[in-house]
Length: 172
Image 1 (spheres, rainbow, N blue to C red):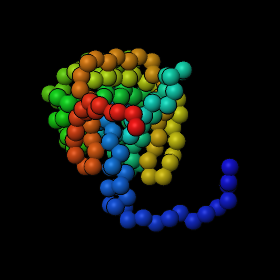
Image 2: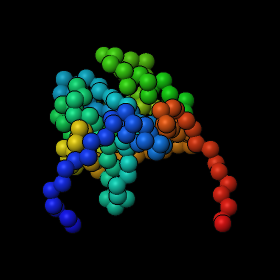
Image 3: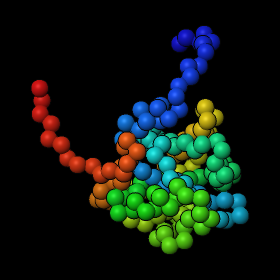
Image 4: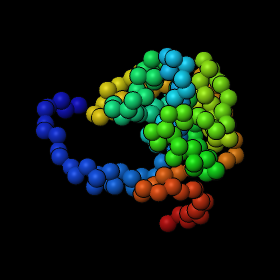
């Protein structure tokens, strides 16, 4: 591994964001509970699986998020993979409204964290590592419970919501 110091390239931020947006992702709401028992949730598309054994997932949150302290203090989070029918939840949890769970169908899962009903999948996790990376905090969590159902997952690509479609690929 080369550990030689090099300068960091400078990019046009909006153009880089557009290029990164070419990679389609699922849309999640990552939920937790603040130290005052207030329910907290944010829309995130930075979710990824890391390991099957043990089951570990990751997601990231911008360092300037006012919700960062809640995720740090709780030490747990729930990844709620939104279904196509939950597009309004994506918008709701991306907005600065104070009570994001008002009108949202959820149940309390492990440690009293909110698990949104009707999702394509949910993963209840315990934070096992927190990494300070660039302008984000990366959370790795060990999955302690999960569920999934046959739902079309909500996707986001090129700055727009999307849904998956089957493609018949033929070998060349």
